[in-house]
Image (cartoon, rainbow, N blue to C red; front, side):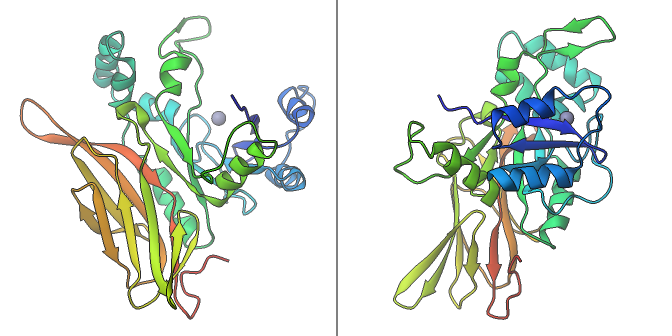
Length: 314
Ligand SMILES: [Zn+2]
């Protein structure tokens, strides 16, 4: 197993996650004495840049510590889903139901509590208007639910929360965790946004793909998530989903839905530049009639740029 350590640091703005810096540096950030001032996001960005690491704003919206002020431009991105917050913000009857079903199916009972993280997504879409920004799913597992100063419930466990959401990184086919540069490859994919967030507790999201194609001379230019697709006459965006559950697939351009599909394959002719991303929901039908759409996948964007440079991230 490969572990790339990171730490979440309390700063004046809020919680800031830093990955890919050497262990002793992380230790220093984690075991800061009470008299020591908290580092600024800018200082953490410099530290990350120096070591080839990555910084990400933790739970910018919601939670006990939402981010205050501007999102630092040195951050690669923000957390768009947070396993801890997503289930805590539900009404009490839903939490009680989850607690009841938890012993029978811990993954699904928590997954049903996850709502579309609308305010974090709105923040993300506004940042995407300005610069490329990565969106990631995080867990924020605390190994239980604190009920006061002393009491706590062992619900949900680390194991249950860690099975909830996952950030899937795209790596070259030859990738193995044993190679000396394995951590480097993962950090690069994380920083570049070659990844998607999956609520895998509802079902494995492995095999999800979102890419763009533009004819380029006799060849074809292919862009993955996090990459730039040049806008041409016959540019297309594609999504492919693992088959199984009934799905609702939504394509967004600059935060606005431009297409919706109910299939496992998706093709969209692109006519306008901008940041395109995909949201996938599993549609669950209730026995009483009606249905609910459970968030399943949030892709990172593909940046479609025209010849004038519109849509081009800096
Ligand atoms: Zn935090």
